[in-house]
Length: 250
Image (cartoon, rainbow, N blue to C red; front, side):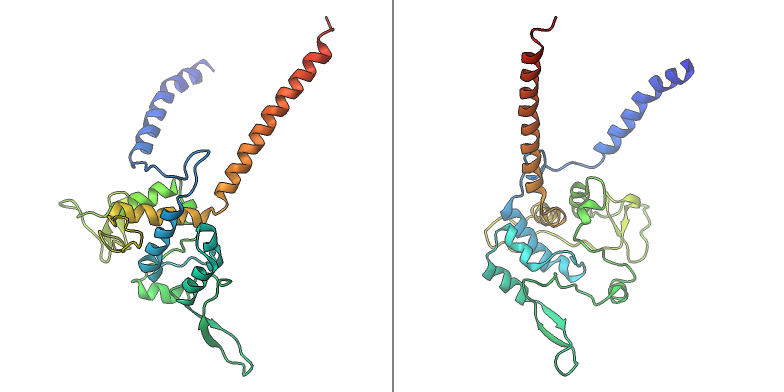
């Protein structure tokens, strides 16, 4: 038992040091929705949707998101109808038993760029672009991971061998990724005049993806605050009652 205790004492500082180095290896970005009272920046989420539509939607689907969900980030019903109508849905069968095309409606899910996984792989040299609906929850600290990944495309160092169809990324495990650099300076023009630098584009699209993965985040935080306040007040009341009932007891 004594030997085990000594081993823990000596190994624990080293373990903490390794964990600290691991966590600090990737820079952490400051997000508006972080923390106990953080909220989504609606303007950033809307800009992120624009980045997704103009860049990411060519390869990545968002099958869990409905167009009507965009009302929650500040779009009007008319704007949502206009956004949905830009896409085509294969629907049916009609009265003649045939499938037909129609403009998407707010009640439809986001239209996927490919009909199935096989088509997606053929169009991307065998790689399957993952669905982005909850991509920020797929990894620990997913928002920071995605943000750093989008900014991590560099020229490979001298002597580093890149596989065929692969790209060097300093922040991904193995430093090789099949996805070409999706963003660069000025790729998307913002309607609100926000500067469209690469870090800004990456921040906005990751904010949008964070919202799509947890659209109820702000409600959950508000409920959490109310519950904590309730238990604090309830605890004080119980303490005062206890003091009153037991004050005459020796």
